Length: 160
Figure (cartoon, rainbow, N blue to C red):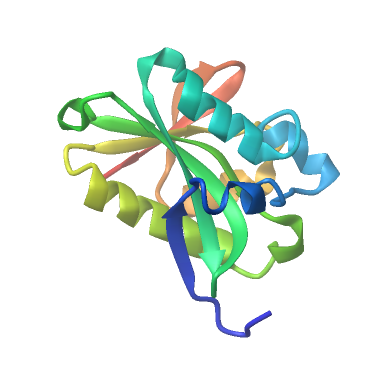
């Protein structure tokens, strides 16, 4: 492992989808992100099925070229109409956790949304009420609870 992280975001595509299947969270975290592993399978399935009529964009988080995490960005079909996007299945691989990569990755993801979806005015996500680590991370980055829930989980929003 390199000492100074250098994160990048890339599409999960034909060249790296098998590597994405290797990203794993710890067993106690599975219920927080996708209900089963590998999490990438859920993201890739949603990109194909497009629940909610949204565009689902699975992204890999790389550190010096090594895949260390995943996230899926969902938005309206017409990017011009995408005034809010949502983040799903944000994970850092269990072997890479507790190194500050989650915060760095979330900053990169927010920058990605601003750059690729300029009409987007807010980013939403849900967080399991029992996932205190994720709640602290999201709140420290400016996400605020909306008072709404989706599938029993609190909905958070970050205004851009």
